[in-house]
Amino acid sequence: MKKSLVILMAVLLVGAFIGMAQSAVPHPNTIVDETVGTIATLDPAWCYDTSSGEAIWQVYDNLIQYDGPSIKKFLPMLSTNVPSVKDGTILNNGKTYIFHIRQGVYFHNGDILTPQDVVYSLERVVIFDRAGGPQWMLSEALLPEINGNYVDDITQWAVKLAGVKSFSDLFTKGTKTPKNAKYRQALIDTFKLLSKAFEIKGNTVIINLPHPYPPILFILAHGASWAAILDQKWAVAHGAWPGTADTWWKYNNPTREKDPLYDITNGTGPFILERWTKARETVFKRFDKYWAGPAKIKYGIIKLVNEFTTRKLDLLRGRADMIYVPISLIKQVKGVKGVSVTPGKGFPTLSLNQFVFTWNVAAKGNPYIGSGKLDGNGIPPDFFSNLDVRKAFEYLFPYKIYINQVLLGHGITPNSAIPQGMLGYNPTVPPAYHQDLAKAKYYFKKAYNGELWKKGFKFTVVYTTGVPAWQTACEMLKAYARKLNPKFRINVASELWATFLSDYETGKLPMFTIGWLADYPGPYDFAQPYYSSAGAYGASIGASYTKWAKVHMDPLVNASMKTAVPQKRAAIFEKLNVLAHNEALYLWLSQPFVVHVQRTWVKGWYYNAMRPGIDFYSLSK
Image (tube, rainbow, N blue to C red; front, side, top):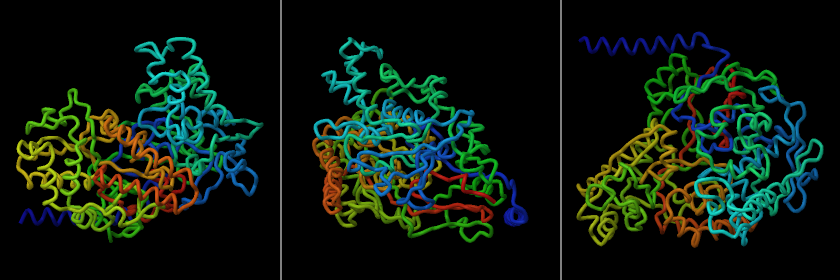
């Protein structure tokens, strides 16, 4: 009886909370968004994740912006024009772009925007060149090719001009001091190649590309955090690169928390960063001098709340205006009065989720690979360099069950790195992997000449805290592995995003779940990070992969940008996808559909696949 009363009381209380929340709009000048992703950095040059990008979006502006929900049309932002052939601001067969910089724009500290701030910001990203970072897009566009191939990072030119084998060869061991005058000059000449791309005439910035690079406007648009515009004077005063050719290498590839702009901001955007309480909340305050007019709300707050039950109660009580809801739990908020769920099933995002195999794991002091040997109590560091092992896992996973029961049909199973809706996507080429336990057993028995099947293995698969669908995927993998062979032991661990990102970047994670949201709406933006030896994933999963990819994948990835003929490009992407499938490069989980949950009193939300989170400036109550 007491139990029944407690349950009844709980139901009545929830009803009361909903009624109270609907009677009056709480905190009318504030929007609270509760989510699960932790911010890794506030430096646009470092940022390459959506949680950090969502914060940077509020604070910083770019040269141009997307037109509301469109991913094809642009509007001016800090540039008063969107370059086009028609108005004469795209010239030289697509190699020259002219931007007229908006005048009278204030940074949050009171400084006025100048064309030099624009040049400095874009150059800094290229020289910053942090490992696994986003600089590859600007580097490929702004630096001359080497032997017909795009240059993904500026150090490649320094190595070439100095005639050495690696960037570290240029410096005295353990320092960033050039060994001799020749090497120092090579470094300076490398920067000159970059600076040639920029020209300032009055209040105009002219970007002269060494070769056509079709996605350049997408790469410069708002949402591309790396192309956000900083205040050079402020950045230098806080210890960032001073903008000089003879110092750039000292600021190349810093560690995250030693980056001087890691946790401070000064943008021209509609909100000022008032407070960043790491792993708790980020508070943004309206910037009343914003060039486009002040925001409708005074405060925007992003809260980290890992527990869904807490997020749900906060939504119902009116303490949160919008929350992250895993697709697997969407039924708990659908149909609730005062809560809207949009747009729902059948609206695919430009994003992919997958398991990643690390071909060469960092072994020293790494508990995630157990003993580090093929002895039943661990795995060797190169475990996933074995094609038979990767194929066995591909056939082990229950794809249909995952989509239908975990995602409730709110997604599709990808067959490659090219998502549905993009050039090069073919639903049947290659065929998507499917669960086939007989084939999984065959490949596990084939791997290591039968020793793997006899001895078994033990390792840890890792997912990001607060993403239950990924947790379930890991648990599914664990269960089916144990079912196939009791000696196959997989531990499942979660990490907060910032920790996860650090462990991923240092090669500590043998197998993990992660996603990719388009940097811009083009297939190259997926092919390059996943397949290229210099890509965000390709460069981080091990030397064995990068060696293989340089021969088999890089030429095709580069060739995909050398023709404007859609049919030819599509054929190249299909060839890449088939190669990736045959090598079992990734275990694809889903291309999810869009789901957004908020209180009905929130106005102005719209979906744009290129926006890394919400846009407080568009919102009101």
